[in-house]
Image 1 (cartoon, rainbow, N blue to C red):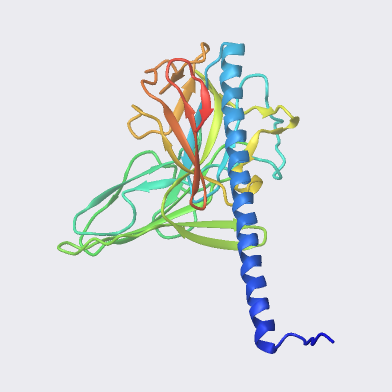
Image 2: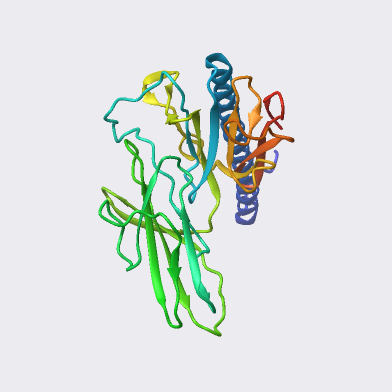
Length: 308
């Protein structure tokens, strides 16, 4: 007779360890595959929308453009152009959100007086600010020129929000400036406070390019377009919501002097501004998901949009 026996405890443990290692490896591979698919899908979506903007420009003889904005991680963009007017009252469920204002220089301890400039990458927006630490409201002063922070011992907290008609008001940007003659300068980050119906969330992040807006560039302003797939809603695309983990990590528009705007002429060629200088080399938008990246590129002269 054949002598048979069951697994010993040690053998059973070894089998379980091998199975666990195999499972972790398989799960990791699956997750990596999902991340790659999400990144490729997001790149396909961005490429499609940029081509749509260019096609609309050539098809309607109206300038169209894209503006990439800063704001702590809401990788979203909106299409805009003629003939796609939104209702006078937008539903909060799909209203576009104004980009969070940014301040230059950032809050810090400085050994000399400072002049703080506030900007918002959302066109046609109005910035309101406070210098007493309170949250800006529609009654707060409208920003029009740099704010002076001066005098030894000064400790000033500047907060700013931006408004645009029919858009959701931006999150609050907050920076604190300390003037200490002969003192030292330290590195700080930007604090963004977002208030929703469920409470207030404060996130501290380093400024980064994270969203973009596509628009028709009239001499009198811009017009947001509706989603071609659903004309009752604006074409607002939040990459992070559609493709978890994906965001716009960088934008390079050569010759723009650090700006983040690109325009398509009625002939389809990319420009730095409406009627301004044409691109002399490729513009590159980089999407990231973890350590993986994918670029969407716009060629000079022809405005061809492709991925790499």
